[in-house]
Image 1 (cartoon, rainbow, N blue to C red):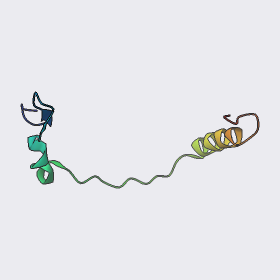
Image 2: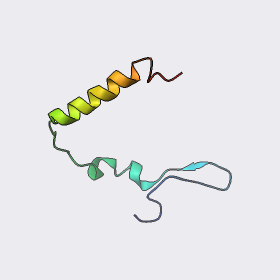
Image 3: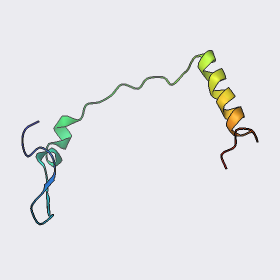
Image 4: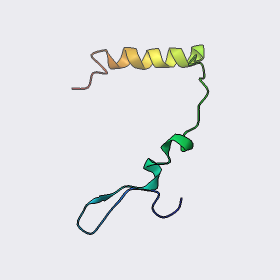
Length: 61
């Protein structure tokens, strides 16, 4: 990144907007949607954590 790309402050604490604010439309890329399916093993582990933390033994007081 070049100098001036990011926001900064002057000596009085005033905001100096960076160039990223005007370049925003050109700098973002479209990301591909990825299915959020997890493995059965991951589901089982997640469920074990859930069961523990909602139990009296795993409750955060």
